[in-house]
Image 1 (cartoon, rainbow, N blue to C red):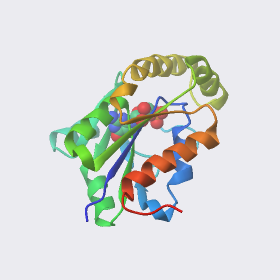
Image 2: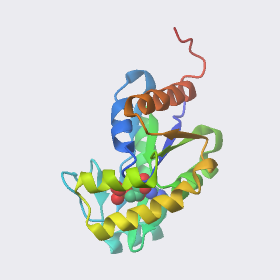
Image 3: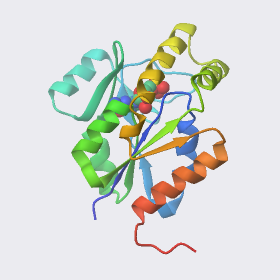
Image 4: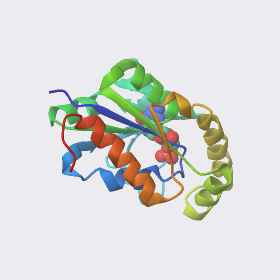
Length: 194
Ligand code: 5GP
């Protein structure tokens, strides 16, 4: 059986990495994370091949020409991010469901391509102000980057209703439970819950 795709869209700082980290190891869900390629510089303790494949812009563009991406976006000016077809194939070959952490436009493209095989979940911050506080507290982005991310978040929030579900991350435990439930129902539609 071919695996399904779980698209998690969320502005950065909305807690999506934490939420993904909390559900990814649940064997019942059979999930594996699709590592995207990006031209943005490595941040904090990120590791090449685990958080992203870090590529030069030339290499990224070469791979676009070679049709190696299932989707890609210039998420910020001059910063490209994309899902490699080889990642989806690798995870499917393992019999697992693919988790994609991608921006809302990329998510809409994947949804268009994979239809009912894909579930899109938008994780929204309680407010833009809370998002700003979280990004400042994270301490990994410059002031200029934070403003760029806030602008992008405002843009993305405008598209949230195009996703199959919206989960507001006000309380982390509640958000984890909600996302887990949505994913479980999607990947195990016929199983009885006790
Ligand atoms: P960050 O720089 O915070 O890791 O990611 C910035 C944005 O790029 C996030 O919204 C993230 O979801 C998005 N992103 C990461 N990988 C991909 C990808 O492969 N494709 C698309 N379209 N967006 C991505």
